[in-house]
Image (cartoon, rainbow, N blue to C red; front, top):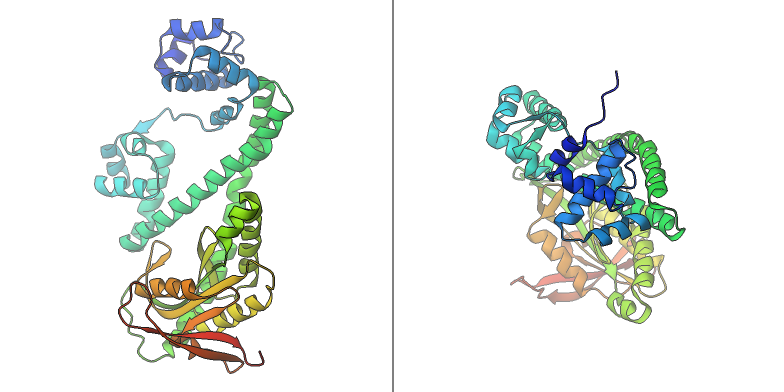
Length: 395
């Protein structure tokens, strides 16, 4: 049997307002979805009005926003119902076998708000059960917490992109077409309800494909590292090739041509990097017009860098700096002196140049030539660093 819709008093209690306040909102025309029954859409709209009032907006401002459709995006909150059942931290600890402090660490490391620790929902409990099973299976805690942080950061970026892109390419066009607020909300809610169940299968498929790729690369890289002498690396350390690439003159181009044109140029540049990298390398992060690339084989990465420059003849020209050495791997990122050195080498490169250190030059094949430009004192380094310009032998 279908559950009865809540009463005005129940809705008001859930919002933290009085029934009289809720009725006044209805009388003032703020509750367009309300037709005498507190449907999920009407409750969601009331929750939006309550939040807007908490932030100091007047009833007239809220009504205008509702009529124009500016609040319509909030109707999607109805797809994520507020949990009825919650657990205390002590109850969650007893059920999962995890220490209360560890539960707090897991939830906050994954990026969940502090309120998630104070009132643990059933879905959060399911997450904690998975975490307990992972640790029971034998994954070390230090590795699990790093993985949890990476998951949280990556999924936060995904969720942020989903919301912003839906807003820009669905919500904004509907507003510009003048679609009434309630109709707009229903259209958006219907589309989101169809898309939401597809997100997890899509991400799961991509995750599995990429996981297989990186397992393969790790097996090859581990085998090859065993063949090198002196590979006694500390736990959590790796020996990798690091490249930083950016666009020379990007700031001036932004001032001359505007932000939108500059962003288009950067997107093409980053896309070119992504589509041309060797299999053992990947982009770790982007910072403005700069990309940080890490690979297991310095020879193949410098081959890529020289070939990449040959593809670009128009300004702004890329500049690339490379180094090869031991780094600390933590939370999906790479840290340490060798990373800083690669960044400093890149800063000394000119447009169209590939500038590398001696360890990279010594790892390359005979088809590349390396011109020593001297020992340069890089910022933050007391000992001068030998730098080479990498080119094809026939250049």
